[in-house]
Image 1 (cartoon, rainbow, N blue to C red):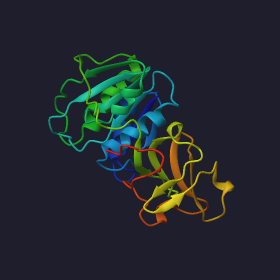
Image 2 (cartoon, one colour):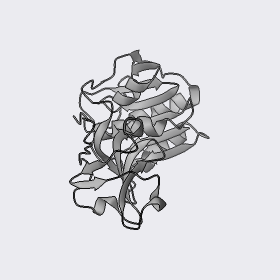
Image 3 (tube, helix red, strand yellow):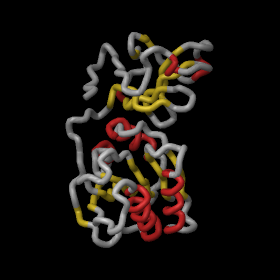
Length: 247
């Protein structure tokens, strides 16, 4: 399958055009829209979501991953194979955590696409490359091995809110494997304790929990965490016993 992971949004033509090209050039292969509302331009935040949400997909799946404020500039397009999954997109750091955590990684630079729109490489460069991978299971012609942008200065876990879902839940870049169950988190002076799930707390009460993809998520039972003052994308998450390097 081909899986979309972008900041293109549901509104407007962009996601649909990428889906259409993918389907036209890889007929019969499902195209799944996993994320279309990543925070615009926030490459770092998306980089911590990608490995958490990609982990549930099988070997051979092709991800089109695009948060691309540098479109039309001198950044290159890459294809990465990490632990058997393919990732296609602009090389601006989005693949930093996927490659860091993978057991096996190979990367290649995509050749320049003749006639591609300088402002829409998602449709004209990355969707065709992903379709080729999905059809053939190998790199398109003209690709050359390369090193990807790694951002070694980024921490292994990011102690900030990186995404707000449609229910107002605040997803962080922290894996729960590094946060004790007994930890109390502080976000903009809101002191938040852990619960296993929504029904374990009173209506209107805030809590944090391990979401279905292994990340620390802040929620309010039958309410919205993002309605609490200061809980928004970019908000820092603090815990007294651990010094998170938030970068």
